[in-house]
Length: 460
Figure 1: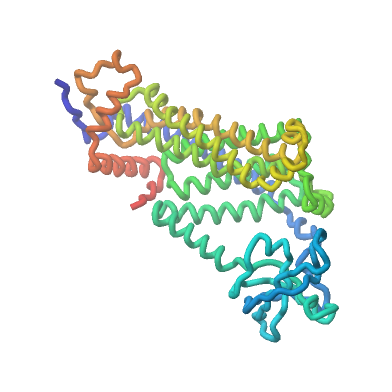
Figure 2: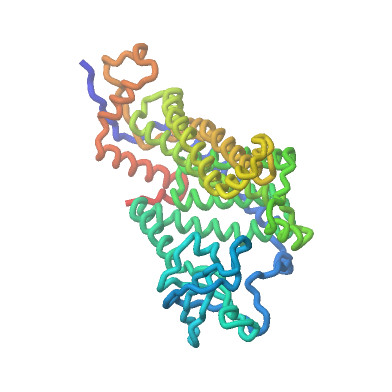
């Protein structure tokens, strides 16, 4: 007959406490200089303000007597198109939206382009932005020109639903993640983008900016703990790997970043702007979210497995966590590929209709950038998973997850007959109770508070 586990609530031994202190000091010795280096790098690369002097033609600027207006559709009608499609007959019929301007005044009769009507329906109550040509219009209808739909309210509603769902499911941790997202936006808008306009080194901009974002986001969302620190180390490793591969790929494959009129417009705006540098920086930034996802998941998986089976060896713990990691790799690779494929669907359709050879198609500049973006990001996150897992295993075995179990697995468990430890691990997990796990988490938070300063924020 096997015996049940007995959990000892006594304080850890002096040797175990010393090991934990050494592990925490080692993490601090690595991460503090790394954080300081990122801050110093940001200070040295901070834009000088020269980006404010770069001007690009504003498509929404107007001549004297011409203005942009917003209004609400009151009714619609059909009339002969003033500006028919290139392949249409002269008597092509178009939809005219009769719009009440927000500024007041007479109803504006705005012709909706046939290309727009083919994609969406214009209904009463829709909000539309249009151009008022004033006295320069040749006819009543030509006085107004359709610009776009006003999407402020539905987009704000969608963003509100997203924020509510995140906070409802993830509670305060989700709320902190949203605030961290706002901080990441500030780093991109105030540091990375102006730096690229001024011609700062793209590799350093992407690496330093991404490191600052991840350091702030991870600790702000998940709290100061050894678990978060191991995830951060894995993330930084993935960032460095991605940056080096991206720098090699953009140079070796001669990726210019010049694929459409907008790219050429940006390139001509200033001699300091490099489209290939912007592409390189984009390759680094584009994989941040998925990289953060896999590293924090692996770190959490190791901690939870160790909490449920604290007597497991580091080899067994690493093997179990890597089984989770391999599943994550398989699903994440699909996520990245399909995300980029979905964003590039119009380009893929256009290349398909051109009936070019397949090799020529996938190596063309337009598609090659998306393929390289997918491959570079995937390599970085795949390599980050085993590295993060190994770091987390070594740290959790030294620091502990808050458990102090003293008894071994049941006497009748034959390790030689169970080489993977699945039955032993199942026996450990089966004995745990919700109360025991809550108590262990409280002990972990208290220990981390004494080792790291601020305690890990509680989601409850």
